[in-house]
Image (cartoon, rainbow, N blue to C red; front, side, top):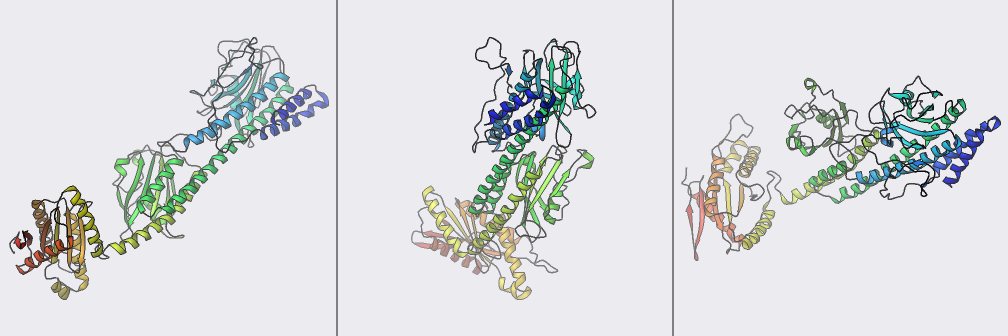
Length: 618
């Protein structure tokens, strides 16, 4: 169907050149060409990468050639693809994982457009017999330049993808707004035609700009002839009609490919939504946000900021990729800091900003402590709130680029969509973890509770038996805790308990050892892979960390607090952890009765038992 419409368009143009009333066939020829383009084969649902036809100069004696058609070469230094022509696409730090599929779609569309352009140019050259070369030029990467996109020629001297510099030669003149056509009938050789190598015999040229609906220049349609005065105003009229058709075909190709890609990106977003709802951990939500953004939106630096302590308004950069990654990840901040992303979090509103790059005009993204990088010239921050209409947000996605005005409305909408889904998933994950914490952790100190302690100790004991290692047990009790409550009140007692929990955590291996609030003013510490010497040293270090520093109970004066500690070393052959805790408790009882503020170790001797003080009473 498409080929038939192209043939009809060519026939109508042929009749139009007969003059007279046939001149009115030109609009119908244009309509036929456009219909042929619209009825071309559509994009496949899963496009496959097609190779771009290789340039081959066909000769008169080449039996495999059809006409004298020169096809496009794979693009080299000069580019004239649709993205350059319509949006001047740039590249960033990251390589989106979806890029391969996007490139396949563009390759398919570019190939189809080349075919249609070739048909149109071949028809035009056939209908104007004196034509030597007819060519289409699209904008190049650099402003004001043109690149030879497609051509049909009798000459082998045409340079594929020839780059026409600004204000250089006859063709470039058509990029100027004050020139609406070029019609020359007696030029000398190929002077001013920079798409030829050498100096071929060219005497006549005609060309018109390819205009969009706003009358802006989007390319050039140009033809030449070896005969003098080969073209007149009739050919200019025909060129204008074909130029309009070429713009329509090009824009439709660009728009259909771009819409298809955007649909695919929203489809990918749908799959990420499902992944969000399958995750119940907050850190997995961060990971899913990162994977989606990296796969679909270019950037030079991407950061995810999270307000982890809502009560105090403090947070950190929980994820970072790209420029200065190692310096930014883990960067702490407060909602009182002066930074653009902090502003986005505080107001729960997207923030977009271009920067001059002047070192003296640097605007902090987070706070004054961050490393300054003036190469990053653009920032877009998208807040993620867990509740609709919230005054502030809990997370923010910050994208930065070395190019100003980097993101389109579509890319911003993608970020807005992912933010909405991520906010819901983040709230759900936090509720799940909060519920899990209520069941497994002590509400006052954040340490694991009595029940969870027994489960963890059983797990560590099984591992210790397999690896033939010891587990050290410490049981701590706050000295004279009843006196503290009676004198200063229960809120003061709670502050003491929280302070002791914090100091114990500081003295053990956070990812390895076990710390729990056993009940009331008692604590238990499990030291994994612990030698007898390490058991004694760690117990004494904890005792000193608590006793050597006063406790702030939010009164005029701080108060001293000490603890008594009972210890027991669980060797691989000893399997009863419940009994082991009982032994540590007996040693603790001995320490309290022996004067408090000391460590006592429980030692079992072949059926008999004893306790040995490690530290004398103070």
